[in-house]
Image (cartoon, rainbow, N blue to C red; front, side, top):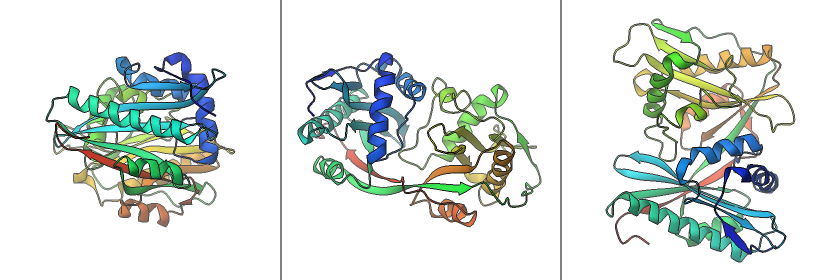
Length: 326
């Protein structure tokens, strides 16, 4: 299979892109969306930059065979973070994949320069652990393996006893009232994760509170009854329904604790609560992803009984450090 035409992506491409993502995930999983509505949400996240920072590859029959996307993930510590997504049909020829990666790195360089000639940037992308050809192409383009994301699952069967919250904290539902405070808490909790999305006010709702598959009953905020600062949100958990699973599954999509509230058992309390609520709602399994560099979190999940699903992937990065970066 060859790509004959490259065109900018549009929201109308959500259905064929979802089909392409399903083909790719069946062989080399990297956590892509597989339902059209989720792909549509992904495309909407690029906003007005969709046409400039994405493209779709069509084969000789006019079918979607490849997809490329460059996304601005925000600036952290003076460094622009850029997420690259490259998806190819499993039967696509290697030269088309090489062209796809060249376009991604070139477009990322243009995005970096748009922020100022001296703007440093780090590019991040995913590669399935079984995709040796893709990983080789990435390393040939200057990327380095930095970590593995583990995909963990836990059967909702025997439930541990509920965990009491430390004094001074209270559970609250997610919703409009604490929308902005939850966003700020999320961005603070993930400040040291170079590839984590740090949503702005425009993109936060679709990432969390207004996500189309949000499970409000499993999601929660932990609020300090007497706040030490202007933000009472100490920790948060947003859960989603996994509509691609072969049995009822809830995803712990976004879980975090602000640094000043860590090591107090807040994550354990929220996960155990989600387990109990998942059981009551008829879910059979919980699923989450965690980096193998986050050893405290990985150890916690393993203590709770989570095991690897076999759908983990590698994360690779490349630095763009100056105005003459290649």
